[in-house]
Image 1 (cartoon, rainbow, N blue to C red):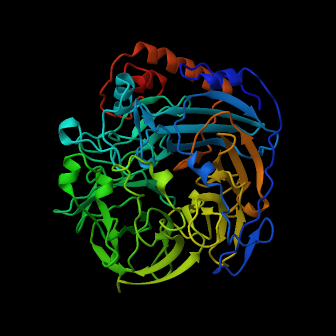
Image 2 (tube, helix red, strand yellow):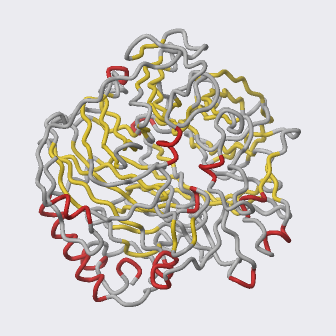
Image 3 (tube, rainbow, N blue to C red):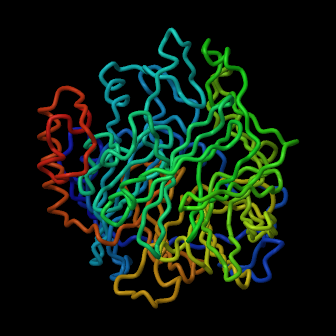
Length: 587
């Protein structure tokens, strides 16, 4: 690693490490055998013949648990790696909860940690320019000043209403996207936060140019309609009495509302629904309405349990797909088997007008053992073998006119974070990449990566060592690949948590040949922990000097700023002059 430190007030130990200026070639990790083949796949290609995991754990549980820790440093440095492909150029961004200690309070649920964005810019010349920074939400800044927790958690750490239990902190911890020249950190319980794509400095909470009303929220899972070059997002407000209100938004490539006269399409689902993700096709939006409900409002008010701990799943009730026309002309309700889903891979309309939906289907909603009563973090009490719901990839083919569906399991191994090449988002796809567990049967932590050919059923699997855990696989197009290039012509990039080393690495695999193992692994000198979602942006490629200059500007203006600055969230004038004003990073 060749580490070149960029000035930063919180760099701490990472700066000292950067001063060592060590140079090595990044190692290509040896392939660990895939322990067992999916029983449903006609063909499986792995790094070596599968072996049974019966009677032993194929993963290191302590190493997995170590991924839920606080990132103590905010760093900026350059790592050199000769194996990095010359045609992999751009910036990989990822968001994740990364603060699990606030003063004397230990955060007990992973969904409640403050968000931190990490970025790696790959210059095609064997260099990876890394930086990471917490999102300076208003709540984050106020708690940093106070030196203690001021807000309740959504899924643990409740507070009584007289002690701030009805206040809400925007965690900004779930996803980070780049659209129309804007980098946004997302959390479905609030508004996006606008970041600088070079330094990762926080500018402000954004209402997307006035599109979001003061109380509106914006999901962590917007979708891209690649054919029309639109960003399509939604927000939702669940209410057990009045139903769950959905609001859909569509933006053009410049981040302007497609229809200024009707920038929002509202739709209501009956009952209390937890809607984390959705899909968009040429003519429709589709969401899964699972049988969820919320109970124990008095306990929430009195601070006996968090709101998320009051959500339950009724396995005796059916689920349904709500299919909503994008032009607002109506909707259809299609009954389906009882299940929950956090994430979809993609959806499209076939030649007969049916919706083909690839979704990660979960038998039942499980958010972890209630931690508020015991004080034990969810990850320490979780029993993967007995508690976790089965999570596998299924294909539903939905006839919106007849209101019928067919379904088949595509990937029988525990999986999540399924994705496709962004070029085919909302259109027909052939390949799906997903994070998978090492156990061939049952549930196990996400650790490896799978490439699935949905036409042939062929699977390619790769796993690191038992103490290492990959995150969401993100497709990165090969530099120079045109629109007619094969769908798998590119790379898969992701961060890997190493439970023994206590730090992260950037892993790069061939999207076409995942089973061959990484083409490059770049060890980093930073603890990142387990991540959630991110994106690769070919068009963002700052140089090392750009990053150093932006970091200096960020630090200079941050020192001058003393108080939270409420701004209107307008997108106009984005850039250093607009970004680095009083209020940068929430101060």
